[in-house]
Length: 450
Image (cartoon, rainbow, N blue to C red):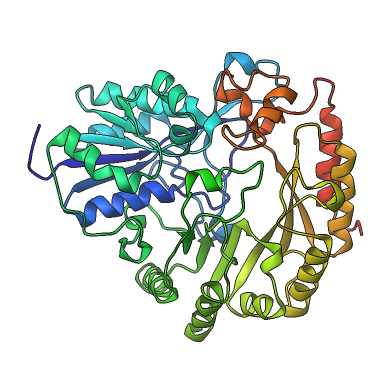
């Protein structure tokens, strides 16, 4: 145990899956922890096993597709329960020998913190922790993140970490550091006041190709399929001035033009939050691009909001529609009506947004869902002249829909998170046809269908 400032290694693990792509996917929570530790005089190292710009990786243009791009992938064996899936299973990210070489060149850390994202990616976490353990056998490894929070018991039994931290890590990280290193600090930030946080440590990446922003936390809706309200139960906001200063910092210091909003409810209470921020962005006139892969709430879109989004540079706008079967959507959520959707799409088109810029997410693979309903929803979205985007449902423990998903699945979801993988549509019946799925994907991508 040491009371001197420790050296802490923070690691974003590999993904094991049938498919993975960098759709503006950054471990924002881990990068935020890295920034917090550094701001409290802790020596930090950061390794991203998904790094598309690793020095040994093939050259990749960081500005192509507004920062998005494919991960390096290597075929690996499928988990035993998924051998019947007729798709290739892969490790996504840097090669293991590259990771081992990078770890051996750094000073031995006093503590390793590993994050986790999708629950069904835990085998990638296992492999990452195994290699960390091989290189640093005497160093404690702590796991946090989404999988650790939603499947805590499973993570404790199977991930291979020395300890598992569930819930928001900002509140726990300094206690964890003190427990394992003896180093104690007085926190110089307030976990309930987002403006007091330092910026995430994007500068420790090999390349900053885009910046993910969190202007607020939490979501007032409790949709049956979503865990946002479980992972961030308290609504918190940053001030518009704080967000603007961060945007200007990354743009001026690192020439970043693409910013990705990770908010679950950016447009909720828009008059107090989003609209003042959008007006400030317009006034800066920096020619930036903004993207919303997490979707915005349709009911909050007014004519004024649509105009401000367009003028401030929102380039990729996603709407949280989920289904156009409005008469039967009550078991899913209560956040949008047919009139809300038609009104919002009209406002967006009037503001100048094109079909290629605006997409509406449609959930596919829900328990008991009739795939004909998905087809009808695709046609309904296309009739508004925006793009339907299929989002495959992943069953999430502790959500309202979880018991229904467990009952409907052809897999034992409760036994192993590996079966919640949305790539295998686990809640479709045993007789469902992959050809039907392919036809729906083709229909959704058909820009000529009205």
